[in-house]
Length: 501
Ligand code: PHE
Image (tube, rainbow, N blue to C red; front, side):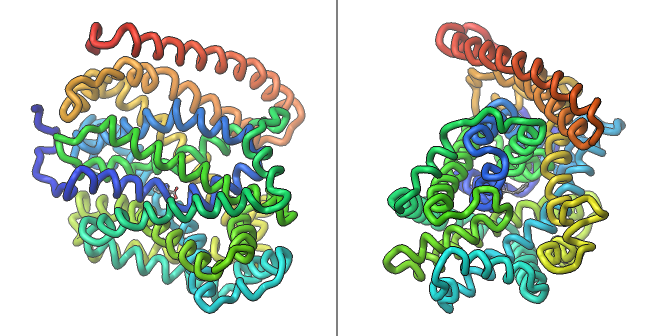
Protein backbone atom coordinates (compact mmCIF):
# COMPACT_ATOMS: atom_id res chain seq x y z
CA UNK A 1 0.00 0.00 0.00
CA UNK A 2 1.46 3.34 -1.04
CA UNK A 3 1.66 6.12 1.49
CA UNK A 4 0.01 9.36 0.67
CA UNK A 5 1.91 12.45 -0.36
CA UNK A 6 0.50 14.08 2.74
CA UNK A 7 2.34 11.75 5.12
CA UNK A 8 -0.64 9.90 6.59
CA UNK A 9 -1.03 11.53 9.99
CA UNK A 10 -4.26 13.44 9.34
CA UNK A 11 -7.37 12.82 11.41
CA UNK A 12 -9.70 10.27 9.77
CA UNK A 13 -13.42 9.57 9.50
CA UNK A 14 -14.83 7.20 12.12
CA UNK A 15 -15.80 4.54 9.58
CA UNK A 16 -16.36 3.93 5.88
CA UNK A 17 -20.06 4.41 6.34
CA UNK A 18 -19.26 7.60 8.20
CA UNK A 19 -17.55 9.04 5.17
CA UNK A 20 -20.31 8.04 2.77
CA UNK A 21 -22.88 9.54 5.10
CA UNK A 22 -20.97 12.77 5.53
CA UNK A 23 -20.31 13.09 1.80
CA UNK A 24 -23.92 12.23 1.00
CA UNK A 25 -24.90 14.76 3.64
CA UNK A 26 -22.83 17.36 1.83
CA UNK A 27 -24.31 16.46 -1.55
CA UNK A 28 -27.94 16.07 -0.49
CA UNK A 29 -29.26 19.43 0.50
CA UNK A 30 -31.15 22.42 -0.78
CA UNK A 31 -29.68 21.73 -4.21
CA UNK A 32 -31.86 18.64 -4.48
CA UNK A 33 -35.02 19.69 -2.74
CA UNK A 34 -35.16 23.41 -3.42
CA UNK A 35 -33.05 24.36 -6.45
CA UNK A 36 -33.40 21.28 -8.67
CA UNK A 37 -37.19 21.59 -8.97
CA UNK A 38 -37.16 25.35 -9.44
CA UNK A 39 -34.35 25.26 -12.04
CA UNK A 40 -36.14 22.46 -13.89
CA UNK A 41 -39.33 24.51 -13.73
CA UNK A 42 -37.62 27.54 -15.25
CA UNK A 43 -35.77 25.57 -17.93
CA UNK A 44 -38.31 23.34 -19.60
CA UNK A 45 -38.81 20.39 -17.23
CA UNK A 46 -37.90 17.07 -18.84
CA UNK A 47 -35.38 18.54 -21.30
CA UNK A 48 -33.55 20.01 -18.30
CA UNK A 49 -33.78 16.75 -16.39
CA UNK A 50 -32.09 14.84 -19.21
CA UNK A 51 -29.30 17.38 -19.63
CA UNK A 52 -28.77 17.39 -15.88
CA UNK A 53 -28.53 13.59 -15.80
CA UNK A 54 -26.04 13.67 -18.69
CA UNK A 55 -23.95 16.22 -16.77
CA UNK A 56 -24.05 14.08 -13.62
CA UNK A 57 -22.82 10.99 -15.49
CA UNK A 58 -20.30 12.56 -17.86
CA UNK A 59 -18.94 15.31 -15.60
CA UNK A 60 -20.18 15.04 -12.02
CA UNK A 61 -19.30 11.46 -11.23
CA UNK A 62 -15.77 11.48 -12.73
CA UNK A 63 -14.98 14.83 -11.11
CA UNK A 64 -16.22 13.63 -7.73
CA UNK A 65 -13.81 10.69 -7.93
CA UNK A 66 -11.04 13.05 -9.04
CA UNK A 67 -11.60 15.34 -6.06
CA UNK A 68 -11.55 12.41 -3.64
CA UNK A 69 -8.26 11.31 -5.21
CA UNK A 70 -6.73 14.76 -4.77
CA UNK A 71 -7.98 14.93 -1.21
CA UNK A 72 -6.89 11.52 0.00
CA UNK A 73 -3.53 11.69 -1.74
CA UNK A 74 -2.61 15.07 -0.29
CA UNK A 75 -4.50 14.93 3.03
CA UNK A 76 -4.99 18.67 2.75
CA UNK A 77 -7.50 21.46 2.21
CA UNK A 78 -7.96 22.43 -1.48
CA UNK A 79 -5.25 25.13 -1.57
CA UNK A 80 -2.71 22.94 0.23
CA UNK A 81 -3.70 19.94 -1.89
CA UNK A 82 -3.02 21.57 -5.25
CA UNK A 83 0.19 23.09 -3.90
CA UNK A 84 1.44 19.78 -2.52
CA UNK A 85 0.75 17.74 -5.64
CA UNK A 86 2.30 20.33 -8.00
CA UNK A 87 4.73 22.33 -5.86
CA UNK A 88 6.08 25.63 -7.08
CA UNK A 89 3.36 26.15 -9.69
CA UNK A 90 0.30 28.43 -9.75
CA UNK A 91 -2.07 25.43 -9.41
CA UNK A 92 -2.75 26.30 -5.76
CA UNK A 93 -4.79 29.23 -7.09
CA UNK A 94 -7.44 26.77 -8.26
CA UNK A 95 -7.86 25.71 -4.66
CA UNK A 96 -8.07 29.38 -3.71
CA UNK A 97 -10.92 29.97 -6.14
CA UNK A 98 -12.64 26.99 -4.55
CA UNK A 99 -12.36 28.47 -1.07
CA UNK A 100 -13.74 31.77 -2.42
CA UNK A 101 -16.65 29.90 -4.03
CA UNK A 102 -17.34 28.30 -0.65
CA UNK A 103 -17.71 31.76 0.90
CA UNK A 104 -20.10 32.97 -1.77
CA UNK A 105 -22.21 29.81 -1.91
CA UNK A 106 -22.66 29.55 1.83
CA UNK A 107 -23.66 33.23 2.01
CA UNK A 108 -26.87 32.74 0.01
CA UNK A 109 -27.29 29.06 0.86
CA UNK A 110 -27.75 30.11 4.44
CA UNK A 111 -30.47 32.56 3.43
CA UNK A 112 -32.54 29.81 1.81
CA UNK A 113 -31.79 27.46 4.68
CA UNK A 114 -33.04 30.29 6.90
CA UNK A 115 -36.37 30.32 5.03
CA UNK A 116 -36.62 26.57 5.63
CA UNK A 117 -35.80 27.04 9.30
CA UNK A 118 -38.44 29.78 9.48
CA UNK A 119 -41.01 27.55 7.80
CA UNK A 120 -40.22 24.79 10.26
CA UNK A 121 -40.77 27.09 13.22
CA UNK A 122 -43.93 28.62 11.78
CA UNK A 123 -45.26 25.18 10.92
CA UNK A 124 -44.99 24.22 14.59
CA UNK A 125 -47.50 26.97 15.32
CA UNK A 126 -49.70 25.74 12.46
CA UNK A 127 -49.46 29.01 10.49
CA UNK A 128 -49.45 27.51 7.01
CA UNK A 129 -52.09 24.94 7.88
CA UNK A 130 -54.51 27.80 8.61
CA UNK A 131 -54.10 29.35 5.16
CA UNK A 132 -56.91 28.31 2.93
CA UNK A 133 -55.71 28.04 -0.61
CA UNK A 134 -52.72 28.08 -2.91
CA UNK A 135 -52.91 31.86 -3.48
CA UNK A 136 -52.84 32.57 0.22
CA UNK A 137 -49.85 30.26 0.68
CA UNK A 138 -48.04 31.83 -2.23
CA UNK A 139 -48.64 35.35 -0.88
CA UNK A 140 -47.52 34.15 2.54
CA UNK A 141 -44.14 33.06 1.21
CA UNK A 142 -43.62 36.31 -0.72
CA UNK A 143 -44.31 38.32 2.41
CA UNK A 144 -42.15 36.03 4.54
CA UNK A 145 -39.08 36.32 2.29
CA UNK A 146 -39.59 40.07 1.87
CA UNK A 147 -39.59 40.65 5.62
CA UNK A 148 -36.02 41.84 6.34
CA UNK A 149 -36.13 40.90 10.04
CA UNK A 150 -37.17 37.36 9.36
CA UNK A 151 -34.89 36.89 6.35
CA UNK A 152 -31.78 38.20 8.11
CA UNK A 153 -32.70 36.72 11.50
CA UNK A 154 -33.16 33.17 10.26
CA UNK A 155 -30.05 33.50 8.08
CA UNK A 156 -28.15 34.41 11.25
CA UNK A 157 -29.64 31.47 13.13
CA UNK A 158 -28.63 29.03 10.42
CA UNK A 159 -25.06 30.33 10.25
CA UNK A 160 -24.81 30.11 14.03
CA UNK A 161 -25.87 26.44 13.90
CA UNK A 162 -23.25 25.67 11.26
CA UNK A 163 -20.52 27.41 13.26
CA UNK A 164 -21.45 25.53 16.43
CA UNK A 165 -21.21 22.20 14.67
CA UNK A 166 -17.99 22.90 12.80
CA UNK A 167 -16.32 24.00 16.06
CA UNK A 168 -17.05 20.60 17.53
CA UNK A 169 -15.60 18.77 14.56
CA UNK A 170 -17.80 16.93 12.12
CA UNK A 171 -17.37 13.36 13.30
CA UNK A 172 -19.49 12.85 16.37
CA UNK A 173 -22.82 14.57 16.05
CA UNK A 174 -23.57 15.15 12.42
CA UNK A 175 -22.28 11.82 11.18
CA UNK A 176 -24.47 9.96 13.63
CA UNK A 177 -27.53 12.13 13.04
CA UNK A 178 -27.30 11.92 9.28
CA UNK A 179 -27.36 8.16 9.40
CA UNK A 180 -30.77 8.21 11.05
CA UNK A 181 -32.33 11.31 9.53
CA UNK A 182 -31.46 10.86 5.86
CA UNK A 183 -33.50 7.63 5.55
CA UNK A 184 -36.42 9.36 7.28
CA UNK A 185 -36.25 12.19 4.75
CA UNK A 186 -36.29 9.60 1.98
CA UNK A 187 -39.44 7.93 3.35
CA UNK A 188 -41.16 11.24 3.81
CA UNK A 189 -40.38 12.23 0.23
CA UNK A 190 -41.94 8.98 -0.99
CA UNK A 191 -45.10 9.82 0.97
CA UNK A 192 -45.19 13.27 -0.60
CA UNK A 193 -44.69 11.85 -4.09
CA UNK A 194 -47.61 9.48 -3.57
CA UNK A 195 -49.88 12.20 -2.21
CA UNK A 196 -48.88 14.59 -5.01
CA UNK A 197 -49.55 11.99 -7.69
CA UNK A 198 -53.01 11.26 -6.37
CA UNK A 199 -54.16 14.89 -6.38
CA UNK A 200 -56.64 15.59 -9.20
CA UNK A 201 -54.92 17.26 -12.17
CA UNK A 202 -51.43 16.12 -11.22
CA UNK A 203 -50.61 14.31 -14.46
CA UNK A 204 -49.61 17.57 -16.16
CA UNK A 205 -46.73 17.70 -13.71
CA UNK A 206 -45.60 14.19 -14.50
CA UNK A 207 -45.64 15.02 -18.20
CA UNK A 208 -43.74 18.24 -17.53
CA UNK A 209 -40.98 16.36 -15.71
CA UNK A 210 -40.72 13.32 -17.97
CA UNK A 211 -41.77 14.30 -21.52
CA UNK A 212 -39.07 16.49 -23.06
CA UNK A 213 -39.87 19.53 -25.15
CA UNK A 214 -36.58 20.07 -26.98
CA UNK A 215 -37.60 23.49 -28.24
CA UNK A 216 -36.89 24.74 -24.70
CA UNK A 217 -33.17 24.04 -25.05
CA UNK A 218 -30.82 27.00 -25.33
CA UNK A 219 -27.45 28.16 -24.01
CA UNK A 220 -28.95 29.01 -20.64
CA UNK A 221 -30.53 25.58 -20.22
CA UNK A 222 -27.19 23.90 -20.79
CA UNK A 223 -25.51 26.19 -18.35
CA UNK A 224 -28.17 25.79 -15.73
CA UNK A 225 -28.02 21.98 -16.04
CA UNK A 226 -24.24 21.84 -15.65
CA UNK A 227 -24.27 24.37 -12.82
CA UNK A 228 -26.99 22.40 -11.05
CA UNK A 229 -25.08 19.12 -11.48
CA UNK A 230 -21.91 20.61 -9.94
CA UNK A 231 -23.82 22.36 -7.17
CA UNK A 232 -25.89 19.38 -6.10
CA UNK A 233 -22.89 17.01 -6.07
CA UNK A 234 -20.79 19.55 -4.11
CA UNK A 235 -18.03 19.46 -6.71
CA UNK A 236 -15.87 22.15 -8.30
CA UNK A 237 -14.89 24.00 -5.12
CA UNK A 238 -13.01 21.46 -3.08
CA UNK A 239 -15.64 20.22 -0.64
CA UNK A 240 -14.95 16.68 -1.82
CA UNK A 241 -11.19 17.32 -1.73
CA UNK A 242 -11.57 18.35 1.90
CA UNK A 243 -13.81 15.41 2.82
CA UNK A 244 -11.54 13.06 0.84
CA UNK A 245 -8.59 14.28 2.89
CA UNK A 246 -10.09 12.60 5.96
CA UNK A 247 -10.53 9.24 4.16
CA UNK A 248 -8.47 6.19 4.99
CA UNK A 249 -6.29 4.34 2.50
CA UNK A 250 -8.53 1.29 2.77
CA UNK A 251 -11.57 3.18 1.53
CA UNK A 252 -12.84 2.40 -1.94
CA UNK A 253 -13.03 5.77 -3.69
CA UNK A 254 -14.96 4.57 -6.74
CA UNK A 255 -17.75 2.93 -4.76
CA UNK A 256 -17.99 5.95 -2.50
CA UNK A 257 -18.36 8.41 -5.38
CA UNK A 258 -20.89 6.18 -7.10
CA UNK A 259 -22.98 5.73 -3.95
CA UNK A 260 -23.01 9.44 -3.20
CA UNK A 261 -23.93 10.43 -6.76
CA UNK A 262 -26.72 7.87 -7.04
CA UNK A 263 -28.26 8.84 -3.71
CA UNK A 264 -28.08 12.50 -4.57
CA UNK A 265 -29.68 12.08 -7.97
CA UNK A 266 -32.47 9.92 -6.61
CA UNK A 267 -33.39 12.50 -4.01
CA UNK A 268 -33.46 15.28 -6.61
CA UNK A 269 -35.73 13.34 -8.96
CA UNK A 270 -38.01 12.45 -6.07
CA UNK A 271 -38.23 16.08 -5.03
CA UNK A 272 -39.24 16.91 -8.60
CA UNK A 273 -41.90 14.20 -8.43
CA UNK A 274 -43.18 15.56 -5.16
CA UNK A 275 -43.38 19.13 -6.42
CA UNK A 276 -44.46 19.21 -10.09
CA UNK A 277 -47.65 17.16 -9.83
CA UNK A 278 -48.64 19.51 -7.01
CA UNK A 279 -47.77 22.59 -9.07
CA UNK A 280 -50.14 21.48 -11.80
CA UNK A 281 -52.83 20.24 -9.43
CA UNK A 282 -53.07 23.54 -7.57
CA UNK A 283 -52.65 25.74 -10.63
CA UNK A 284 -49.28 27.38 -9.93
CA UNK A 285 -46.65 28.01 -12.61
CA UNK A 286 -43.59 25.72 -12.78
CA UNK A 287 -41.41 28.77 -13.39
CA UNK A 288 -42.18 30.38 -10.00
CA UNK A 289 -38.47 30.65 -9.16
CA UNK A 290 -36.86 30.22 -5.74
CA UNK A 291 -40.22 30.25 -3.94
CA UNK A 292 -41.50 27.11 -5.69
CA UNK A 293 -40.85 24.64 -2.86
CA UNK A 294 -42.35 26.95 -0.24
CA UNK A 295 -45.48 27.63 -2.27
CA UNK A 296 -46.37 24.13 -3.44
CA UNK A 297 -45.61 21.68 -0.68
CA UNK A 298 -47.59 23.45 2.06
CA UNK A 299 -50.62 23.08 -0.23
CA UNK A 300 -49.99 19.37 -0.51
CA UNK A 301 -49.62 19.10 3.27
CA UNK A 302 -52.88 20.91 3.73
CA UNK A 303 -54.58 18.21 1.70
CA UNK A 304 -53.21 15.35 3.76
CA UNK A 305 -54.66 13.99 6.99
CA UNK A 306 -52.29 15.10 9.75
CA UNK A 307 -50.71 17.49 7.26
CA UNK A 308 -49.52 19.98 9.89
CA UNK A 309 -47.42 17.32 11.58
CA UNK A 310 -45.96 16.17 8.28
CA UNK A 311 -45.18 19.76 7.36
CA UNK A 312 -43.15 20.29 10.54
CA UNK A 313 -41.36 16.99 10.10
CA UNK A 314 -40.58 17.75 6.47
CA UNK A 315 -39.16 21.22 7.06
CA UNK A 316 -37.21 19.89 10.01
CA UNK A 317 -35.58 17.25 7.80
CA UNK A 318 -34.80 19.78 5.10
CA UNK A 319 -33.10 21.93 7.74
CA UNK A 320 -30.98 18.91 8.63
CA UNK A 321 -30.16 18.26 4.96
CA UNK A 322 -29.15 21.92 4.63
CA UNK A 323 -27.01 21.79 7.77
CA UNK A 324 -25.05 18.76 6.60
CA UNK A 325 -24.33 20.66 3.36
CA UNK A 326 -23.70 24.00 5.05
CA UNK A 327 -21.09 22.52 7.36
CA UNK A 328 -19.27 20.99 4.40
CA UNK A 329 -19.03 24.46 2.87
CA UNK A 330 -17.83 25.84 6.22
CA UNK A 331 -15.38 22.98 6.56
CA UNK A 332 -13.58 23.95 3.33
CA UNK A 333 -12.91 27.45 4.63
CA UNK A 334 -12.10 26.22 8.13
CA UNK A 335 -9.72 23.47 6.95
CA UNK A 336 -7.89 26.05 4.86
CA UNK A 337 -7.44 28.42 7.81
CA UNK A 338 -6.42 25.61 10.15
CA UNK A 339 -3.96 23.91 7.75
CA UNK A 340 -2.45 26.88 6.00
CA UNK A 341 -2.75 29.74 8.47
CA UNK A 342 -2.38 27.76 11.65
CA UNK A 343 -5.57 29.19 13.14
CA UNK A 344 -7.51 27.23 15.74
CA UNK A 345 -10.65 25.50 14.48
CA UNK A 346 -12.81 27.50 16.88
CA UNK A 347 -11.39 30.87 15.88
CA UNK A 348 -11.57 30.09 12.14
CA UNK A 349 -15.19 28.95 12.36
CA UNK A 350 -16.36 31.95 14.40
CA UNK A 351 -14.56 34.61 12.35
CA UNK A 352 -15.49 33.22 8.96
CA UNK A 353 -18.99 32.32 10.02
CA UNK A 354 -19.36 36.01 10.85
CA UNK A 355 -17.89 37.14 7.53
CA UNK A 356 -20.19 34.81 5.60
CA UNK A 357 -23.19 36.04 7.58
CA UNK A 358 -22.42 39.63 6.57
CA UNK A 359 -21.81 38.62 2.95
CA UNK A 360 -25.23 36.95 2.93
CA UNK A 361 -27.20 40.01 4.07
CA UNK A 362 -27.63 41.40 0.52
CA UNK A 363 -29.00 38.01 -0.54
CA UNK A 364 -31.35 37.99 2.43
CA UNK A 365 -32.66 41.39 1.33
CA UNK A 366 -33.02 40.33 -2.30
CA UNK A 367 -36.67 39.34 -1.97
CA UNK A 368 -37.54 42.62 -0.26
CA UNK A 369 -38.43 46.09 -1.38
CA UNK A 370 -35.07 47.73 -2.06
CA UNK A 371 -34.37 47.91 -5.81
CA UNK A 372 -30.65 48.02 -5.04
CA UNK A 373 -30.80 44.34 -4.13
CA UNK A 374 -33.75 43.17 -6.21
CA UNK A 375 -32.30 44.62 -9.43
CA UNK A 376 -28.60 44.39 -8.70
CA UNK A 377 -26.52 46.92 -10.69
CA UNK A 378 -29.40 47.27 -13.13
CA UNK A 379 -28.87 43.68 -14.31
CA UNK A 380 -32.54 42.75 -14.02
CA UNK A 381 -31.42 40.07 -11.54
CA UNK A 382 -31.52 40.19 -7.79
CA UNK A 383 -28.26 40.08 -5.85
CA UNK A 384 -29.25 36.61 -4.72
CA UNK A 385 -29.78 35.31 -8.30
CA UNK A 386 -26.59 36.98 -9.37
CA UNK A 387 -24.49 35.39 -6.60
CA UNK A 388 -26.07 32.00 -7.31
CA UNK A 389 -25.46 32.32 -11.06
CA UNK A 390 -21.82 33.41 -10.76
CA UNK A 391 -20.91 30.77 -8.20
CA UNK A 392 -22.85 27.74 -9.46
CA UNK A 393 -22.83 28.33 -13.21
CA UNK A 394 -19.31 29.73 -13.57
CA UNK A 395 -17.09 29.12 -10.55
CA UNK A 396 -18.02 25.48 -9.97
CA UNK A 397 -17.76 24.37 -13.63
CA UNK A 398 -14.44 26.21 -14.01
CA UNK A 399 -13.24 24.51 -10.82
CA UNK A 400 -14.40 21.13 -12.14
CA UNK A 401 -12.72 21.71 -15.50
CA UNK A 402 -9.39 22.68 -13.92
CA UNK A 403 -9.60 19.75 -11.55
CA UNK A 404 -9.82 17.42 -14.58
CA UNK A 405 -6.90 19.12 -16.32
CA UNK A 406 -4.89 18.98 -13.11
CA UNK A 407 -5.26 15.25 -12.56
CA UNK A 408 -5.63 14.19 -16.20
CA UNK A 409 -2.65 16.15 -17.50
CA UNK A 410 -0.58 17.99 -14.88
CA UNK A 411 -0.33 15.25 -12.25
CA UNK A 412 -1.12 12.45 -14.69
CA UNK A 413 -3.83 9.85 -14.56
CA UNK A 414 -1.30 7.09 -13.79
CA UNK A 415 -0.57 8.52 -10.37
CA UNK A 416 -4.27 8.97 -9.84
CA UNK A 417 -5.12 5.42 -10.88
CA UNK A 418 -2.47 4.13 -8.46
CA UNK A 419 -4.13 6.18 -5.71
CA UNK A 420 -7.51 4.59 -6.42
CA UNK A 421 -5.99 1.09 -6.39
CA UNK A 422 -5.41 1.53 -2.67
CA UNK A 423 -8.82 0.42 -1.50
CA UNK A 424 -9.91 -0.79 -4.94
CA UNK A 425 -7.09 -2.96 -6.37
CA UNK A 426 -9.07 -3.93 -9.48
CA UNK A 427 -10.35 -0.48 -10.52
CA UNK A 428 -11.73 -1.99 -13.72
CA UNK A 429 -13.24 1.28 -14.87
CA UNK A 430 -9.85 3.06 -14.87
CA UNK A 431 -9.60 3.52 -18.66
CA UNK A 432 -13.16 4.87 -18.82
CA UNK A 433 -12.51 7.29 -16.00
CA UNK A 434 -9.17 8.40 -17.52
CA UNK A 435 -10.81 9.06 -20.86
CA UNK A 436 -13.53 11.13 -19.23
CA UNK A 437 -11.17 13.17 -17.09
CA UNK A 438 -8.63 13.82 -19.83
CA UNK A 439 -10.97 14.40 -22.74
CA UNK A 440 -14.70 14.21 -22.61
CA UNK A 441 -15.55 15.99 -19.34
CA UNK A 442 -13.27 19.01 -19.91
CA UNK A 443 -14.47 19.27 -23.49
CA UNK A 444 -18.14 19.31 -22.48
CA UNK A 445 -17.60 21.76 -19.63
CA UNK A 446 -15.51 24.11 -21.79
CA UNK A 447 -18.20 24.09 -24.42
CA UNK A 448 -21.03 24.88 -22.03
CA UNK A 449 -18.99 27.67 -20.48
CA UNK A 450 -18.37 29.09 -23.94
CA UNK A 451 -22.10 29.11 -24.70
CA UNK A 452 -22.76 30.65 -21.34
CA UNK A 453 -20.32 33.48 -21.98
CA UNK A 454 -21.72 34.06 -25.48
CA UNK A 455 -25.20 34.05 -23.98
CA UNK A 456 -24.29 37.00 -21.73
CA UNK A 457 -23.87 39.21 -24.82
CA UNK A 458 -26.94 40.89 -26.21
CA UNK A 459 -25.87 41.56 -29.83
CA UNK A 460 -27.80 39.84 -32.60
CA UNK A 461 -24.66 38.76 -34.48
CA UNK A 462 -23.26 37.05 -31.38
CA UNK A 463 -26.55 35.32 -30.75
CA UNK A 464 -26.84 34.05 -34.32
CA UNK A 465 -23.29 32.78 -34.24
CA UNK A 466 -23.82 31.11 -30.90
CA UNK A 467 -27.00 29.40 -32.09
CA UNK A 468 -25.31 28.08 -35.23
CA UNK A 469 -22.29 26.84 -33.32
CA UNK A 470 -24.51 25.23 -30.75
CA UNK A 471 -26.66 23.39 -33.27
CA UNK A 472 -23.54 21.73 -34.72
CA UNK A 473 -21.76 21.07 -31.47
CA UNK A 474 -24.82 19.51 -29.90
CA UNK A 475 -25.08 17.01 -32.74
CA UNK A 476 -21.40 16.27 -32.38
CA UNK A 477 -21.82 15.81 -28.61
CA UNK A 478 -24.68 13.37 -29.08
CA UNK A 479 -22.55 11.27 -31.45
CA UNK A 480 -19.63 11.44 -29.00
CA UNK A 481 -21.81 10.44 -26.07
CA UNK A 482 -23.30 7.49 -27.96
CA UNK A 483 -19.81 6.31 -29.00
CA UNK A 484 -18.62 6.74 -25.43
CA UNK A 485 -21.43 4.64 -23.99
CA UNK A 486 -21.01 1.94 -26.65
CA UNK A 487 -17.24 1.89 -26.14
CA UNK A 488 -17.54 1.73 -22.35
CA UNK A 489 -20.16 -1.00 -22.57
CA UNK A 490 -17.99 -3.01 -24.90
CA UNK A 491 -14.98 -2.59 -22.62
CA UNK A 492 -16.88 -3.60 -19.51
CA UNK A 493 -18.33 -6.72 -21.14
CA UNK A 494 -15.43 -7.95 -23.30
CA UNK A 495 -12.31 -6.05 -22.36
CA UNK A 496 -12.40 -6.27 -18.55
CA UNK A 497 -9.37 -7.64 -16.79
CA UNK A 498 -7.39 -7.97 -19.98
CA UNK A 499 -6.12 -4.39 -19.86
CA UNK A 500 -4.68 -2.79 -16.77
CA UNK A 501 -4.40 0.92 -17.06
N1 PHE B 1 -24.53 20.00 -2.62
C1 PHE B 1 -25.19 20.91 -1.74
C2 PHE B 1 -26.68 20.85 -2.03
O1 PHE B 1 -27.12 20.23 -2.95
C3 PHE B 1 -24.66 22.31 -1.85
C4 PHE B 1 -23.17 22.40 -1.84
C5 PHE B 1 -22.50 22.94 -2.93
C6 PHE B 1 -22.44 21.92 -0.76
C7 PHE B 1 -21.12 22.98 -2.97
C8 PHE B 1 -21.05 21.97 -0.79
C9 PHE B 1 -20.39 22.48 -1.88
O2 PHE B 1 -27.44 21.44 -1.36
